[in-house]
Length: 76
Image (cartoon, rainbow, N blue to C red):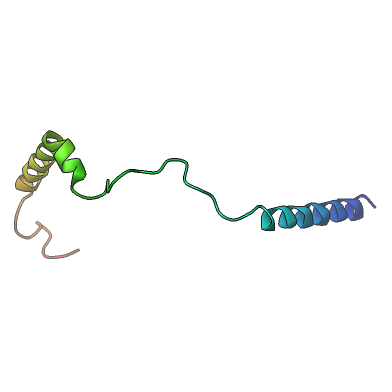
């Protein structure tokens, strides 16, 4: 008997949730709208030293890589 009541309660809650979700009124609006194009070159103008430091670090790391085949041969 308790299983039957639990099942009815869960089905009722699922139906109520579906009704509330369908009538909630559209999508979600953005909490904060970004001004301008932040994914393009704007950040390079604002922070040129950070870009220069990052690019020099990457060039240094790439310069440290050994060239040629691995000791075990080409590939894995």
